[in-house]
Image 1 (cartoon, helix red, strand yellow):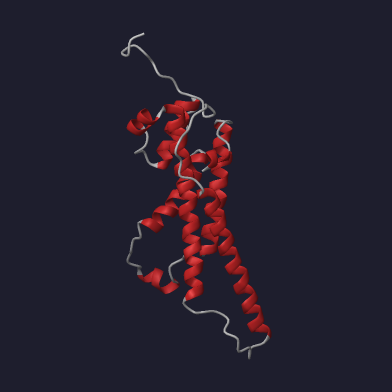
Image 2 (tube, rainbow, N blue to C red):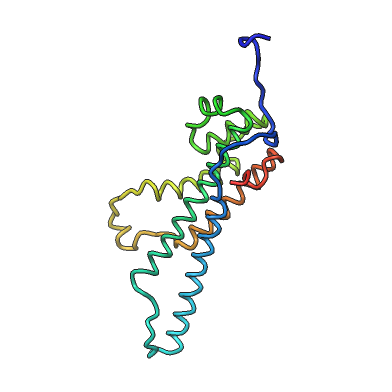
Length: 200
């Protein structure tokens, strides 16, 4: 068989091989969520102490430090969750399609397109924009993009009057971790070999 007529095929995700993979993102997302929840619990306890003893003179919070720590760990959870999914998709594509083919045809797609393209090519399943796995991936990356591409906007009179609605950092971190795990579960329904986000 000549090089011109040879045909490569989609490979199994469980095939033997060695790949250099940046990992630990999933664990980092959970660690950061744990830190957010710990800060939240500590603040609740401090506020309860203050309520029980209004003359309590112990300094409860360092005004600038606690909100920054909360935001830091929340932001880090969001970014790590997105990195876990993106890292997994890149690993999945390289393992199943080969590095050169994947890089030339898939790597530059946005995450929702990448999910649909990889599952279509590798699993023979057509994924649409309203399918849950795409919606979950989009939510994770929308949160990530809001952090890494910060934008300013002019608030209209109505917005200024009622204050711009903003989700709590605790909820953003929690939602990101939940969506990351849901993505892993959903992906494994299409390819049972691809469990646990490939160790990412």
